[in-house]
Length: 180
Image (cartoon, rainbow, N blue to C red; front, side, top):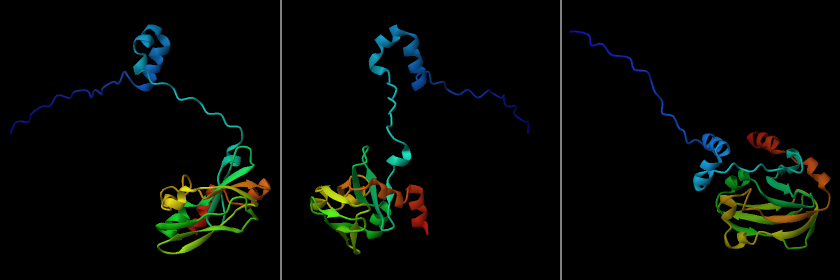
């Protein structure tokens, strides 16, 4: 059998002239191109400024699997149960929300979450006064399962002493706690 010689062809990759950065460079360098193609030009995302450090803006967690996130001015906090707690509970069927203007101390029960598996009290991580509740949970308690650390928040509290946050766990510390 005769060997068939194959000719080696160089590998040619397609070039993408309309990548994000190429388009941006072209728009900056050629104003006439920018005016003709204004609708096709992607805009650079705006930089977002932060007023505080990341450590001050992060969520804090309790050993009872609740979280709190303070507002920028550190006077109000949003409270909820963690993703870990929501998955351990299973499908949530009822949420007992706290009363408005209720004054609480850190560790007090402010409500309850009932699921098909069990029920669990919701404890407040800090002292303060309840100023708002997530009324969506009364009609759709399953919202907690969809986003326990987002749209499934339980209550907002006017924080009496922001220094109480120092005794709570950060995100990485809480992750290690749940792995034990």
